[in-house]
Length: 51
Image (cartoon, rainbow, N blue to C red; front, side):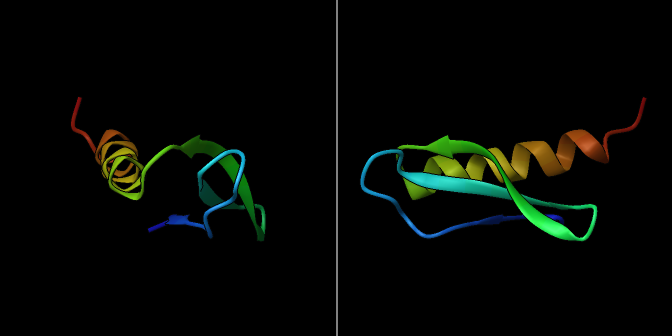
């Protein structure tokens, strides 16, 4: 999966990272780890959804 959760920061919370172009970049922040995991699942399913 091209997404992962980074280490929690004091100001922004849990970063959501995406692997693209050979490096990890922060695409969003979440205030809880559970919400970050749910966001990753939603992004992953959105990318593989049938049309």
